[in-house]
Image 1 (tube, rainbow, N blue to C red):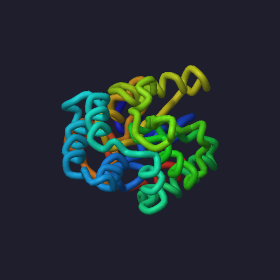
Image 2: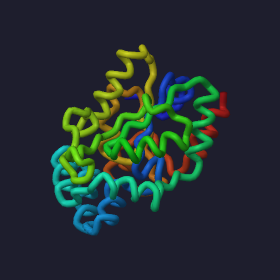
Image 3: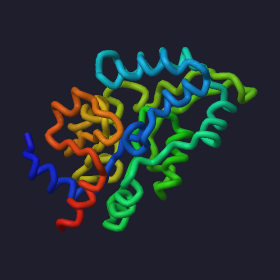
Image 4: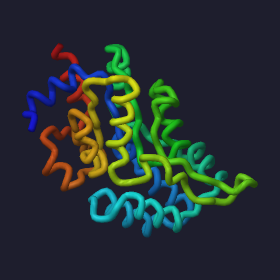
Length: 227
């Protein structure tokens, strides 16, 4: 097991950094915001808490939550335009600094592709560097028709599969995963370093088990300035 000092060195010399999105890069949980927008907020928020705590499989929780919400294409687009995701303080500066250092930045999320791509565009992260879940709609483009269950991010352990894919495709030696939830912590290994983030919400299990736990992205910016 790597020490905190070793984890910091991995972060400073990483080839790639993968960020979770909901409650990490942005302040909200995208699926909870969509649920509120569609009038089933309380029921879905409880399911999210159980999923993030690791007590049910991610795919089971995602299926159940979307079965309650059943969002239309129009509702998803209206959510993004009327209530755009709020970036977490410090994330824009951190991503910019990583880009300056030649580090590849990826968004790896159990959230929805359309919302995550909107966030990526604000951070100058290319769409090709987004891994998220895809909602499906019936041919008329309106009614909810499920989600793409073949996406690795649709299941528990999926974020680790994404990191394995990135290492194989780009031959990265050191990949860092940053996030607030159990699904993020599970991604290391194959990720080389996990950094727990509690700036928006604190998940007890993650705070207790993560060797490196931060509350503000400024802490990571300072680490980069050490070298």
